[in-house]
Image (tube, rainbow, N blue to C red):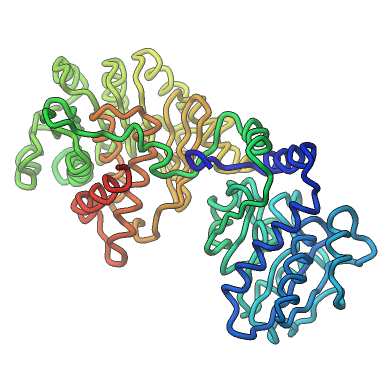
Length: 504
């Protein structure tokens, strides 16, 4: 699907409804879905392995009945356990159950799973609308506690398809087969951790039905990756040189607090910015000079000095925050940088300095017509947007990031294992191309530098932010255990080389 578009639960309902209205019977879609599940089950099973199919009372259970029938017809030992009574099934699920000629047992015992090589979880799909309780929760908890590997249908039962939240209890799957397109809950935590390897199966809904579903996801929602931003990624012509590739200015903290700025500056240079300057108090110039070679240095004691520096129009991006310290001096630096109309990346102390004053920050950005990217982790986000509608935890990460972007007028990169990138125009991307190895001191400073370096080269803010997040994750994946922040910029040549080949 173009550019990695995601479908919400409601959008997927529209796809199914549109396909059925256009003449494809619902049972045909169900048979195709069940066949895709059966195909993955056979790939996971050992020779002659046995399968337990757990069916719920709705269409997800119908998919399970179809998969069970196909596996049984292939000669595999298959048993079905049904949550509820067979006579209570209706619609397409009842039709699928009627095609199953074997026995159906209601419920599952504590030790039943131990006899099987694979369990197919067809209990509840992405549209689960409330927390599980009673018999359903007991069953899900029983499966979650078992050693038997699980193949989930649509999403692991108990995961909210839109938010990735656990609805009371949830199954952890080795693999998940979903249909037509991924849902946000496949990528957002904790849902992503429950899904295992993801597979998307086509089931014959057709392009017109897909377009109907996508129309329900406007502004669009994406899975972050090169398909989203590759067309805007910097390509350097034969006659390009350092002055055509932008000049990023990174503000440094005082002596003994300079490392974060240097990490950011190194990231900006390695990702392709033609020039990078670190501006620091005079007392920190020698400390920075001892560590930097290709990166230039300028003295900057306060907001007036920054104003003087920005007379040089070649400085087209300013990164403010890492290691600066919090308080009025940092707020003043942000105000001057914003008033200059430059592209901005604001992180760390630049965000915390506006604790509870998101509206003030938004006013600075608006008055200077500054295109900005904010890169908060969860704590910084809570401090900056506390007291606003974006701080409502009940909304889920996607909606909080979307509201924060609209409120601030800036691209918001809400960092984490499931980083969300939100544009003020409503576009949003979820990144699942990361690794826990990135959870180390200074990693976020490098990310800020990568985004600044891409902005310097002319990428639009949303695309630069999404690309920076993906490149950052790719570097972490390539390095693996033992990663420290200093490694990330040095991995960029490999990351960029592989990306260049991919974008050809």
